[in-house]
Image (cartoon, rainbow, N blue to C red; front, side, top):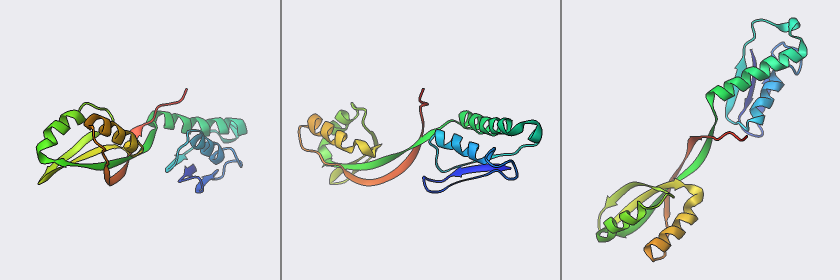
Length: 161
C-alpha cells in the first residue's frame, strides 16, 4: 500500500512501502501537487507487477492510478462565503427586496421583521465591496453591509486546459 498525502504546503508526505525508492509514493505526491490539491490522501495497492514492470512501469502505474482517481472523483475548490446583514425600515423592505432580487452578486438568505427589517444576504466574501457599490447605486443611498457569519463551501472546480 503506497501512499501520498497533502494537508497543506508544509505537511506533505509519501511512502513507497517497499517499492524501489522514488517509484511509487513520490510520483503519487506529484500528481496531487500538479492538481493543486490539499487536505487529500491517496493510497494505491499493487497486487502484481514488481520486477516485471521495472522502475518506469511502476512510476507509470502509480501515477496513472492516482491521476485516474482524481479525474473520476472530480475537483472542488473551497470558497469563503459570507452572510451579511442589511438593515432597513420595515415599511421599505418589500421595495428593497424587489430591487435586490434583480442582481447576481448574492442571494437573500432570510428576512427578519421587527421594528426594522434585517435582510441577510449570502455571497462570496470577496464580493462584499462590489455588492455594497451596487446596493449604493441601486438604492441611491450609501449602503454598508454588516458581516454576521462566514463558512467555506466546496464548489466544482473547472479544469484548466
